[in-house]
Image (cartoon, rainbow, N blue to C red; front, side, top):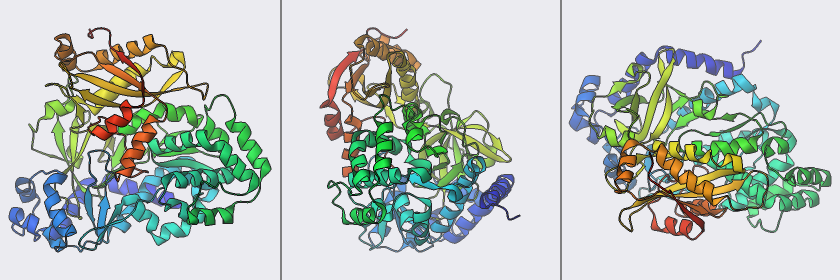
Length: 580
């Protein structure tokens, strides 16, 4: 009997994780052999592809340190400034984690590396759910991003857009996905989302997976369906797409798929017309086996609401990757999002780990302070310890921090498994204290538990350091939703005040000391109208952020973004006393 493709993938994972040290050493040697003569590395290595010389002389850097070299290439200079291989283009980061999108050089080998990575991260998923490519279609919400031409003539685009443009992807699209290519490349995201949902409804009997790259995008789609299902049902009933869709490609795609189907329209209408939308994904797409999207890191805030909508379907975070590098896969895809660990793949990049102190009393960012510069190799990290990730790639990144702090949870063969802890240096601060993304998430998680007994869900949040008056204070913007009704009523103000206090009690030691000494004023929660965070996302997308890879900022720095939030505030609540 012929082996299933994912069984070959599982076998490859075992081989890679059993020989990690040798694979890592060989990969670094190959990268240095090819690139030691570049302008950047020559001054550190003197043409010698030596690991010890590399670790001793090549500095640990951030993207900003390498940006001048990348900008020179984008402006027309030859790529051997930074790497020996010819550059075929650039990848753009999502542009919402740390400000402006980053440009990452791309070479011809990237497509092959992505194909291997996809096989490896999908294999554990298929082990649990079977080969979904043979049992139905994926309803994945996919959005191409416009290309930008650099002065060199080379194009810059997102990683996902480059995948969507591949001939292999386009060839399999009609068989494996519910979304026609025209909807993916529609420049108007609202029209694109409308059509992708509509075509997913029409093909509801074939859908075996619902998802997108990030949890936030899946939730955005479900909320969009809440607002537009009646119009979509009308389209299905008549076989004619709404006049709101003006994109020619989308309308042409609709003409090939749509025909009058009153029975299907009535069925969907009956499901969507229920008082509560709990379990709506499973109800609308009854053959769906799981919801596939990243639910870790900053996306962890969306798991409660996504579980509410999913009807018990597993939330599968299959991979850990960044614009800088492909990193790890989830070998236990049906575990809870809070328990996800990623097994690193030693053939993707050369990985180093910068130890980060974590004694549990203050934020990691505050305590690291660049005290340790001695890095640890992939196979030598220790369980329970936290590290900042560095990558060296064949695409011109050498000992580059990607900004993620990870905790080692275990090993698979010789390869460590990591949980995402936080983004390094993403923090809110009004004085000398520094509150990290992880600190903030923990405090919000503790506080939002008070909402459950009164029938509310926290759907989105962000923070802001208000230093307009002295002492400054933390502001949390919260968007809430009722569980049992689509019509919003205001929560009990006493509960929100209690949430303020619970947050303060859950924050780190330094915050509480400063609060007691009135160096920091009372924490404030500003409740905003439903749809506020959609407006915030629309703002960032209008400024160039990726729709499908959007990450809500943990702390607002933009004055324009702050105006959007403040203009939609419907209630302000303060902590009644300093935390104990």
